[in-house]
Image (cartoon, rainbow, N blue to C red; front, side, top):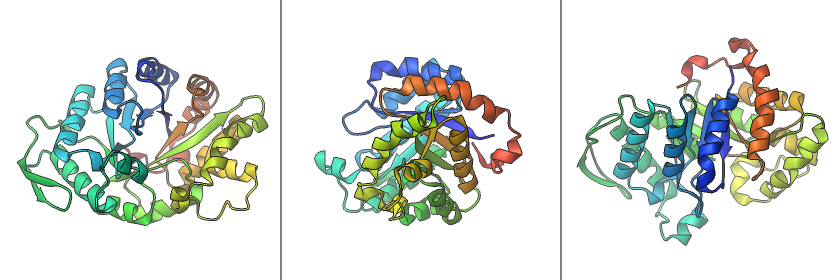
Length: 315
C-alpha cells in the first residue's frame, strides 16, 4: 500500500504537538519536518512529534550537513531512534547555498561535505568506531556509547545526478524535494537502482467538490517554483511552455479526489516508495482532514501489490 506522509513546514514550534497528533489520528504513515534557516529547529520538532505520537514514523527533512558536526548529529539521531522505538527517519542534505553563506558555513565543496558527513553519520549509527580525516570532517576514534538498537533509515536530500550517485554508493535512500514530476522520479529510480527507498515531497491541494479550485489553490506555489534556477535538475525546460493545469498536474497532488489519486499513482509508478504531501502554509489542518477523509481510505482499500510493488524494500 502507498506510504503516504505529511510535511509540516514553517509553522511555529508550539503548533507541532497538535499537528503531530492530528496527522497520526487521521491515518497518515509518516510525518516530516523541515529545518530551513530561521524556522523551528528540526531535531526539536521531531522529538516533540515522536513524544506525542505512538505509531507514525517521523522524519527530519533535512539536516544541512555543512552546519552539523557528524558526531553530534549522530548522537541526536541515535537518541531519537532509541526514544521512539525506531520510528525516526534521518534526512541529511548539503544545505541551501544562500543560507550557508548567510551563516558563514558554506564549505569548499557542497558534495564533498555531504559525502563525508553522511558516510560518517551512517557508520556511527551502525555502532562503528570512526576515524576520518577529510576535507570537511575530522574525527578521531569516536563511537556512540549508546548506539540505536537498530540503525534508523537514513536518506539524502538531493536534486541532481551526483547526489543520486552518492546515495547509491553509500547504500542510502533519497529524498526528492517538491517539484519532482513522475518522469523525474523515474529517472532517479533508474539511477538509484531498485532497492533503495525514494521519498518524494510534493505540493498538494485537495478540493473535494471542485477540481479546478484544487488546482488553482496550488498554482501560485508551482508558478513561483518554475522561476527558481536551483530546480533545474528536477524541472529542466519541460514546463517552459506548459499550461498551468499541465504543470500543476505533473508537479503536485492536487484537484479533486480522483485527480489526487491519479497523481499519487503516477509517482508510485515512477518509483516513489513514500509520498509526502506539502500544502500551502496555513492550510495544514484543512488538508490533513480532507486527505484523511477522502484519499487515505481509498488507498487503504487497495490491494498492496497493485499500488506498491517494492513493499519489501521499505523500512
